[in-house]
Image 1: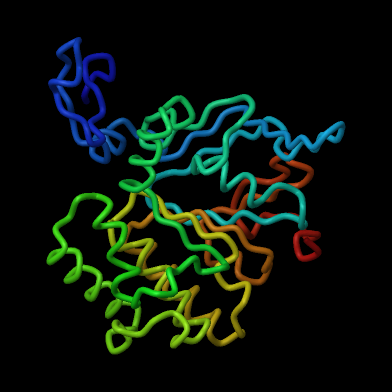
Image 2: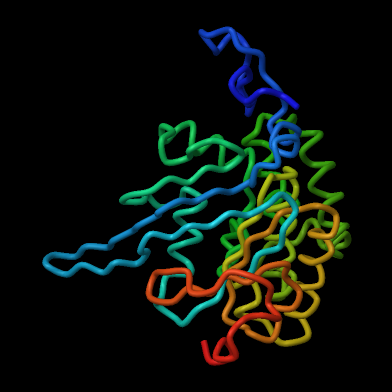
Length: 271
């Protein structure tokens, strides 16, 4: 086993960047060898302030996610689910605590390095799609690759292949307004997966979809998870928790339950 005191985890870095001269190893291989979680959060707090009003959205949250896990986060509206996702991914700042992804303390990175790490190691699926309306499906999907300096030709090929994998092989040239809600969700999933990120964050990905389309999107997420993709998904739909490896229930900004979905409290259905 590699001694963690004698290596640095290489995430887009070069050995010459380390003044100590310590050897670099591949981040994913290193994490697997050390049996380290891909995500580790400790005592994370977040407070929103507006004038004299303070709302403590997160109250000392601890959470680990292992490589390849499918974790569903649930809780009543306004109790911190989306805030938790945004803070864990580095989209929002935290007040206290520590969040590490692939061994990197993301809130201690500069904005530039955090953005680069997010582009390289994370994928996002939002309820609102966040697709660029003037771009075609394939152009939207290739964006994460272009940001990561993949050549335009290679990015286009990979984006088209990913759209084909999600069932949109014949819709690559269509713009978002020419696609149904379910198809737009599939484009966002393809965009989230195309750069082969370490972790995918999904915030209510089926919230605007009919039941049949939502089921197909969930099947797709579960399929990519079975291939080893780590997924953390926020949802309010209690009837889909069985598809996850773990369920995290957030209430009043704290983790009320963290474990197997089958062991969750019955009142979960009421969130």
